[in-house]
Amino acid sequence: QVQLVESGGGLVQAGGSLRLSCAASGMFFSINTMGWYRQVPGKQRELVARITTGSTTNYADSVKGRFTISRDNAKNTVYLQMNSLKPEDTAVYYCNADVYGTYGRVDYWGLGTQVTVSS
Image 1 (spheres, rainbow, N blue to C red):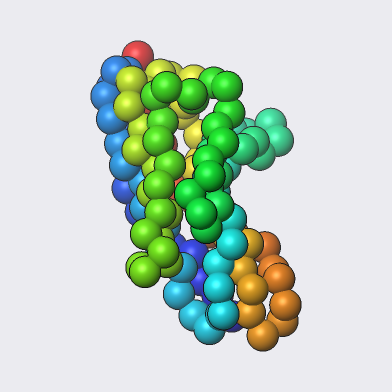
Image 2 (tube, rainbow, N blue to C red; image 1 turned 135 degrees about the vertical axis):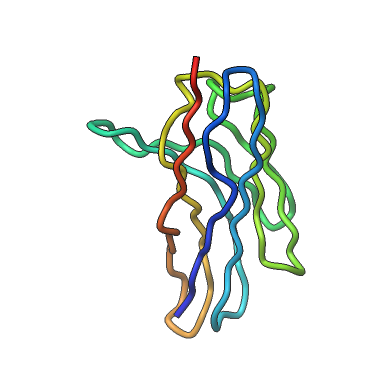
């Protein structure tokens, strides 16, 4: 079993910054793509950013130039640096990891961390 534990959410004023972290633990052989998604009530979960093992990244258009995703493969951790935050960035942010383990390739999700941006 694999666990993804997010941290770093909170309340921030518009224009401020937050850094999210997500650490993977448990038994697995390797982690492929890791990413961050977000969801607001009544809407579908949407991709924010993702990063491959080789550090190829892609971002939602709405966060390009403001958010930066990175990862530390030795620590099985992915980060999301969020700058110039806007009220519309308010959401629950979820960590996602494509993990190769004893059950083959499985998609895992964290429990989510709340990010609230006040105007």
